[in-house]
Every structure is written in C-alpha cells, then in structure tokens.
Length: 312
Image (cartoon, rainbow, N blue to C red; front, side):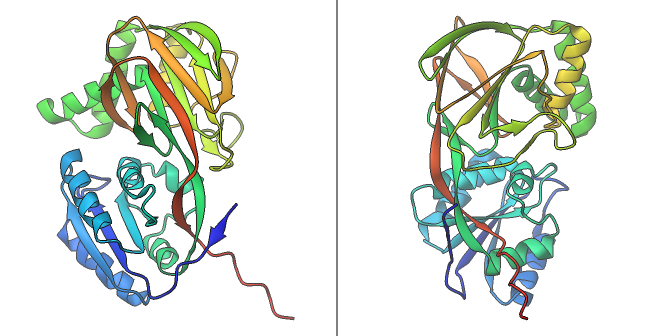
C-alpha cells in the first residue's frame, strides 16, 4: 500500500449532496464549516442539488480550483461522482459518510462518526486504491446488470410519481421484478476466456467481495488490482427473492447459485441492443458490449493515520 501525506493546513473543498441520506441542507453546511474550524482547518463547503447534473457540475467546478482535497459529502453515488472527477488530477478524495449505506467508507475502514471523519480529512494521510470502469464510466464499489438496475429504476419511478418513501418503494419494486422473473442471456469474456449464462443477475465488484460469514458484502482489500464477477445461476423464485433483497442491501452471498471469477478485464455481450447498467447505485443505459476493466491504484484517497506508537 503506497502511503503519503498532505501538508497542513490543507485547502479542502467539500461537496454535499442535498439528496443523500436524511436530506442534507443549508443548516448542515454551516454545521460542517464549524466542525472543520474546530478540527483546526477551514473548509469551503458547497451544497449541490440532488440531481446528477447539479452534483457533477459542482464537483467539476471544485476540482478546477485545484484544492488539496475534494470531499464527497453523501452516499456511494456522490463518492463515485467525486472519484471520477479527481482521477488523474493530483487532487485527493475525502469522504464524509452522509448517505444511507456508505459501503465505500466502510470498506476503506473510515469512521462513520461525522466528527471523526472530519478529523481524518484534516489530519489523515493518503493511499492509492483501485477503481472499476465500464464503457468509460467509473465505479468505486460495484456494477450490476439485470435484476438490480430494474429494481432501482422502478423504485425511483415510484418515489417520483407516487411519493412513496425509499424503502417502501424498494419493496414494491422487488415484488414487481419477481412477478416478471427477468433473465438475461449473456456471453462473458473473462481475460479472454468465454462463458455463457442465462441469468437474472450479474454483479461486477471493484476487488473481491466477501460473500459469507459475518462480513457479508465487505471487501478485505481495495488495491488487489482485480475485478470480481458473480453470476446467479438460474435460481427459483424463492431464491430470487433472497437474491433481490441481498442485492439492494449490498449483502450478497456466495453459494452454489453463483458463478465466480476474478479478472483484470471482463467483456459482457448480449442480444439486447441496450442494457440498463447500475454503477454504485446509479442506473444508466449502455450499448453492449460492456467492457469492464480495473484501473489499478488510480484513485488517491484520504484515510486515517495509524495510532502513534507508545513511548516506553
């Protein structure tokens, strides 16, 4: 693990997603400014609207100002957007876990307490981690096809048109997907070796996910330099229900119902002209073939300094 430090005081710019988690607002922005001051380093904190265009524009403007650190204040979608913007710029990524699940923060071992997370941004060192990419789109956690993107699209439709809460809309979306019992016919090239599946669900992780034991859905490393591929092997409806629940909560399980492989490059082809593809919880439509690759050590992130050794 390559580790380095940023001199202090640091020029820190924070982008807060107003649509993440509990609905971040101007009061939170002022609170964050005060917490950074208390931690000994001022920060420029900016609130971005909940839609992707607004967040991307705010992040792009932030990176253009060349701060030492751009901090993502939100969930995994916000982290992914900021990560894509800082790649190759020399600007480090910081994370304030203000989303619902905060998978990337947890896998990186970052504190979920807000004050502790701010202290880390102010005093922490940096390290290099991998990112995944599909057809030019960056993801820090995972990407998926089939069941999960369908559920997310339907959930968002219910939230906007019917005014349902996120988790109620998610439940209805899962039930709707189960009634359709969707399958994809895919041809997958894994570092040049080809396989075919008929499956309701394809999952590609940035590094390997642990799918069993007490650490379901976590990653032990973010810098191994390989993607992980999980393909559901035609489960029945009950198994599909369990799979759907685990997919939307980030708690997949490796079992006999999954095909598994690790690779630096994965290409997925399908007879469909267009496919809905989820990347870090955001759904876009892409044209196959879907070319996945790992970008090794491409992202600079701020993480906590190790505790100082005890003086004897």
